Length: 518
Image (cartoon, rainbow, N blue to C red; front, side, top):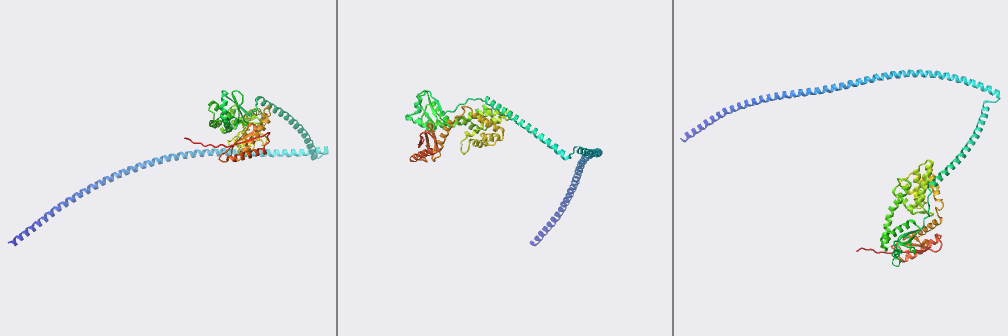
């Protein structure tokens, strides 16, 4: 029974399997057919879309090709117009060239005819010249036969006579011209010089060696002297100028041969008197401040001199040195005043002679500039001034006048000669110079230079009219014992090298200061 049930079950299962397989096969075929139909539809739609898109692309391509073709045709039309214009221009030029060629050919024909005519005339002239030469030759031979002289002999006699007469006439004329020119030049030169001297007539005052400082009262003299004379000693050491306190009411005298040093001392003393506080420390402070202020003061003096003479465009450094000439003397004559006078005289003479007046004034005002330059090298004031001014680009005419105003350098311009003449006029006027003062100043300078030549000397001042040389030594290089040897050495050198009357005292001053601040 169980076997039958099993068979039945197997049969049912087999039938179910076959039925399922048949059902599945039927359903699969239906699905496959549906998928194929859908695929055919999709392919058909895709083919239609592709055809539509291809048609659109073709239409776009055809439109683009048409536009490009139109653009190319426009370019071709423009180029065709340009070519037609160029062709028209070339045709016009060709026509012009043809016309010019015709004109040139016509001119060539005219020139050929003119040349032919000229050659014919030349032939006629040559024929006439030959005939004339023949007639002259025949006439000369006839004259030679009549006179009994050959042509060469007659020519020689005639030439000798002409030359002799010409030489006599020329010699007479040259002598007369030179004599007249000499008289006229001498007269003109005198007129020019006299006119220049008349227009620049200036007062001359020989520079003294003292300056007077006015005091508010005689009580100030006691302050200036100080306790046991310490203030006056300190002032003399710092400034290198003698202070003379005498019975002159409300005044003291500063004595020194160097005007620049004396002016510094005067300004320093006036500051001390106005301030009222006078002691060694204050004296040094006032002196240092005066030295600094002096630079501006010198520039003002130089600018004032240029304004008075009407000169412009000079370098500020040169102006400062020019102002320093106010405190320089030459044989007692103030060098700045002398330079202004030389500028005026040279300018007037240049104007009279038709030369550059401004350049003559410029050369005149700067001709003695070397006297104000600090000397760091050997040489005359002419060479020192030339070397100094050359650095600032002054014109060659001015440089030549500075270097050659004493006639030791060849003049390259008439202005140099005018400066020489103006310099001689200014310095040779009565009362303009004093040889005694110049010799005194030279002796004072030689004394100071002899003292400053020793090692360890900071400064040296010739005071008391040359009776004393005060030497300030460096305390770090010279000790107390060496100071005596230094003074003796300086005295011996002055005695062997310098001529002087009487006796000279050499004072070596050594001072040590220790300074600190609390």
